[in-house]
Image 1 (cartoon, rainbow, N blue to C red):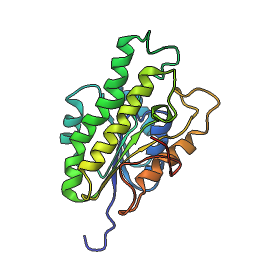
Image 2: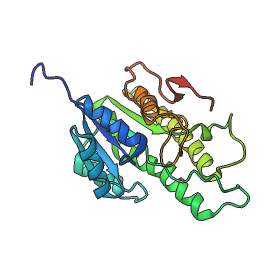
Image 3: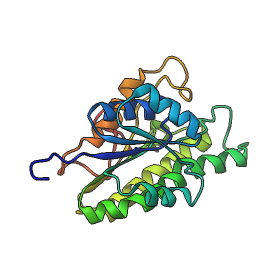
Image 4: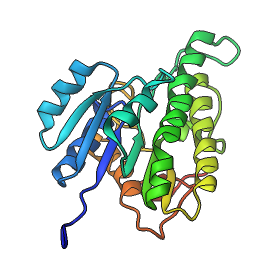
Length: 229
């Protein structure tokens, strides 16, 4: 309809709690249509009811190779994809003694899940000439800052950063911006007590959602400032 303001649509993975849920809440409060992705649909539905707004829960296990494509067929195109699902901050492991099951699970969710989501939703963004893909990463994945500890998490997030660069390069000039964001140490189930408030971590993610058309792509940011690769 002439004069009607286009309503943005966002999809957030791993969103039934923590940063993902807060991002859904804040986008919903803007009047966006939001799809809240969760492995457990009932937990996602309960979370969506708590925050209100036009937030629809969707069953989404990013570890399932077919799930992202099935979801894309079911809900149609989205303007913003936030790859928030993440697992295994493995503080008790060393690289030399790592449990391979944990390592594989970390890569399956933290890297391959985000990769599949991009394959499922980015082509339509490119065809429409606008989109934002935000990969929720971590300073643990910064090679400049990396040392011993959390081997599965750190290496999988470093790989997610690499994927961010590759996707941004492929989508350059299309109107689709792809960036990795570190929300910082946030007081969530994964981060534990003592971190910054969830709202602050979510604000770091939303900064990348709100980038203008001439904004950066292929970058790694925390609170809107570059993080060393």
